[in-house]
Length: 97
Image (cartoon, rainbow, N blue to C red; front, top):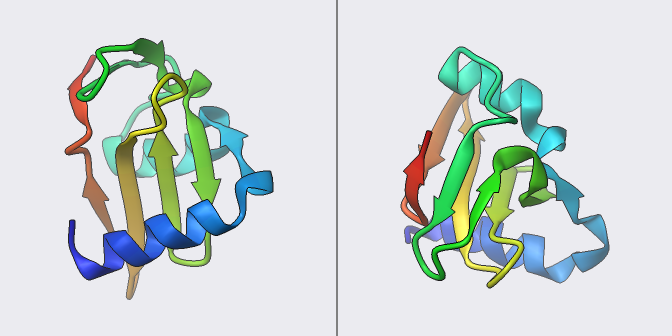
């Protein structure tokens, strides 16, 4: 995890009341992947839980979004927007279909 991911992750953890579901990043996902991804199925790389993206836990911050597994709370996806470019980290996902 790089410094930007760590800062975003820490900021998300500080505001637990801001937890949303995956539908909150539907527009972001569509702009990154070019399609509606809220019904895509993701598998957590840590615990193996399988869920549609719409059911994952999302924390929004000024820097972007952190998406966590609802079962084990591992970070699955991180989106950071810098100078109009969205950087995406999907390292926490075993699969996304």
